Length: 134
Image (cartoon, rainbow, N blue to C red; front, side, top):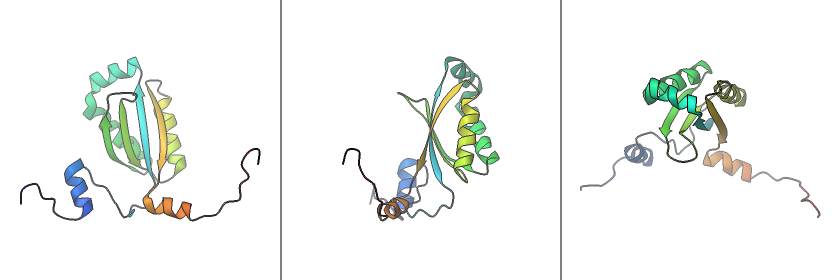
């Protein structure tokens, strides 16, 4: 039947999006979303290196931190680039973010990502908290 999706939901996501999504949270490394914006000088470097050159640089930087680049996309809007990376820990994510931003050519914002299972575990925890003024 034309247009019918075959395989598991992960296979279908890969077919539709062009990259693999692990719905079961099987990856052992934490994932981080990196949103990046180039300065005007950084954009000149992008024109020179091309997007594929910058992808290679990000891939190499992630591998140097013991991780890997999961996906990278160029954007229209507030950010120029978004990347999803697997890194061993928060220290590696911080080092990557600070190192890239310290170049002065790119501003980054890094967000830790949680799987559905990690979120469910967090939601299952009880906390003792007194809201302000109560």
